[in-house]
Length: 342
Image (cartoon, rainbow, N blue to C red; front, side):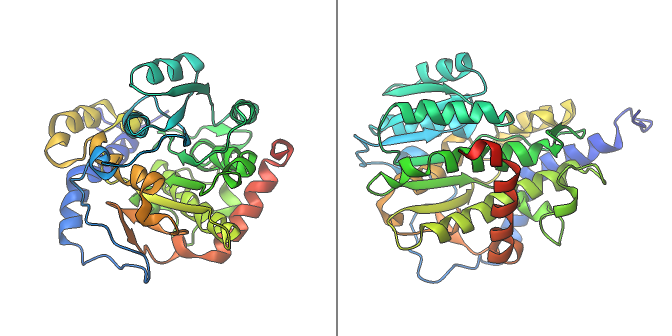
């Protein structure tokens, strides 16, 4: 039973709420005071900024004939990503946790869309989604790994593993691996993984290999950070495996975006975010810009293995760029989903 302060707000609630608020105003203030980002050598820079929208990033692009799979299209960045890519002519396969939710989201945007059910915590559901995608018998030009959960207040497990790690990383790892041949069949297949600046919340040592269950000492923010660190590491190893081919894998930080991702925060924090968030947080139109940039823009046709913020590459340094940790995560992940890899 949780202990409550005299104000009636639990300590854990304060921690989660603080993290949500920090992702907005506090994060924005911190970013303004931060030194200039470190840019990786040889990666082209765009002229886009944090204020650029997904429509502006894709202006003038014709994506007719391309097939794009976007996970988590029922709201927020995922919905905006689907809308804009479909607007530019792509056939977007949009997933939701149920087929009804995915169908409603697909029906809400103009253009060619197809709904699929995908519950990332249910590995048979991931396999079924991949099989349904394969049944279309078309090359897969882009996979956007967007769906996720954030800062679950209490420890939840899936098959003995912490749920955020499963949802944000492991389910997408399985989905991409089940569809790699479809990506490889595309002229210039791309994998885009939505990460977060919250990767800095992970344990300083990196992935907690002995605590993937979360049972040792569960912390909502640290567990979320670990799942986002895993997104980066997955991208690094996938890019290494794509080396020598026209296929690419990149990850990105959308910035502080006002979406339903924060729904697990205390009600007071969610309400505060809705009231003051629009003054300093991105809306989905801006939040989806880097996703759409990596999915479709010709400037990054040959760019792979990098982390992007505001449509430009950034070197996060440390664990998110550790190739040895990335290779180990791939092997551990493959073992965890071995019965479903096919």
